[in-house]
Length: 324
Image 1 (cartoon, rainbow, N blue to C red):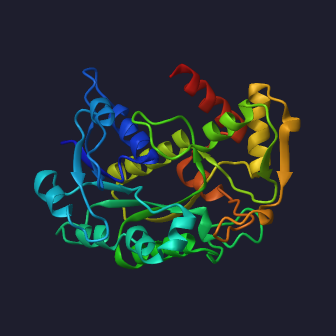
Image 2 (cartoon, helix red, strand yellow):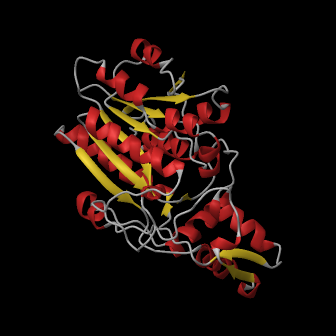
């Protein structure tokens, strides 16, 4: 049986890099050769050398997700993938408010889905990363069947993406991810990472303000990677039609204050320097939902994966950073 082909769309981003490394390492034989043929897309800049060095067998392709230019090159040089993981997104809510047309063009993967539909054999699984920001934020622990009522452009584009995929494509798994946190990537990403940023400001020993009234269920990046690998294995081993929608968060509902306190307690920082403020006291240029914590019962039952607690995830993150 030949190697299975996996394409990571948005492979140079935070989740994309962690995924490529995991696919490369999973089921590697004694010679260190992965059981997957790997390819990834990147948008404008050349793919980072550190990433290419870490995953030497992966093939980079430049693709414009708005127009679909570049997908044909993948067809010709790599072929039809067995699994496609779409990590690419315009994910900064304020940027989406500023340019909603661009947000829609990037976040609704019409070019990607149309490309997958062009293959005669409809045998590719699309794993698509959505967001907890599809929820309105007016209660706690949303379930997948709750009506999606997003309050900002980013959330609206991600709802539109979910609808497009479910209506147009036959095999998919949509993951509504919360804040993704964990160690830095092999080729460091330019955006600030949540735990590392909080750790940096708390380390100064000065008073710092955090919101007490916005709640999420942050997910440790390795847990999200394990979820995607489990879906990949399920598809490859069974090949049954898949139409899945899963909340992909951690088990804990936490505010920014509680996140900061978990970091301070692990580090031994003075928690009295953490000042609690309301999210309404700051104008971020975009409406943000108050409580988009998620019920992950379906995830746990479907894949038998139990994401780590936020406290344990913080420890794993900071221990990994200390080794680098």
